[in-house]
Image (cartoon, rainbow, N blue to C red):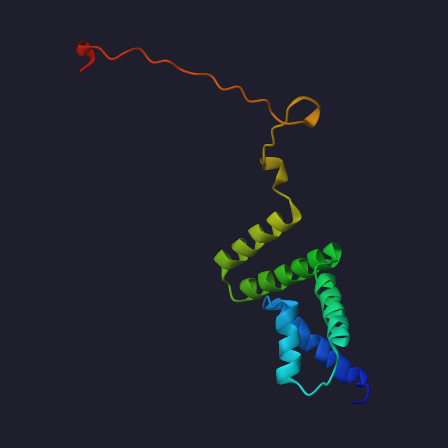
Length: 138
């Protein structure tokens, strides 16, 4: 069989990614390729597809935090404008609260405890012994 085109290779790796995301092990991927495709490739080639698919999946874990915060802020602004234009002030207030939370504007209202030098707060358990119940207490 001839070498796959770039588009075919991309589609194959995408298909392998889908299978891996469903939790399939290597053996299942090999079986799928052998029985359900006409790729006509070796185990080594399937392993290369699995490697590429795994790299793509790993790359999905990388997050551009600044971009995501910017996107969230823009969405928040859009939702707030929409709520105001519809005179849905309850929704506008909820959107504004979400935006404050996103930006940490209410952080000063939070209380964080720390121990010496910013470490853990030492906790000491104390056993409390209650007086024995007497007949007069009933």
